[in-house]
Image (cartoon, rainbow, N blue to C red; front, side, top):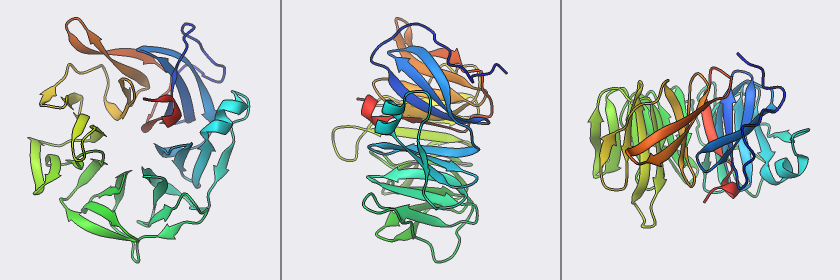
Length: 288
């Protein structure tokens, strides 16, 4: 694996989106302009398990704590000394943003919320819940199904063996049995084991604009009207994020940008020289 201790630059681009990737060596920042990947550099050396972005910060679930990087301070600090701050949650396996609040899950099944106007974590669970695999918006995906945050509690919302969840627009769940959407109960979209799901809401309440689901190395996408299978990139996608374009990252460290070529949507790719990739998040201030 190539080292990324020093920044590497592929072209001089402006108006870049900042993407953050959690991998085996820490958190890597990637600049992307249109469908071209520019410079990328290591921002924090840690053991990150998950990432989430709020309106002004990046949250990192690590084996020691949930750490926050204020994105305004990141811009001012440049590449030398980004200010990641401990929050006091403790070791975390998943983190997500529910509006302006943060949700985090611990190794023992604890789920807690950190409101935007406080520095304290408030527990949402009296007893530990099943193995927690993902958080997105007010959804928590576990091996016992989907839970939804309601006020200061977690309510079980159905399904079993959930591997990932997406809350934007219409709730989606990737499970060992299939891909589901929440309507009048959970309705199957595709059968078979799914590992990853991500979504972006449309202008109308309860409407999806875009969504992607991954089963092994097969990618299924929703374009606002229908679900269809895309040409799969090399490697297994572990996370998807949305800005002006659709961005994704594979387990072996390839960064992907969806590009509308003449023959239809395709993936532009760039190896980051990292491995054991776990999560992807965009800096919201630099997305549409």
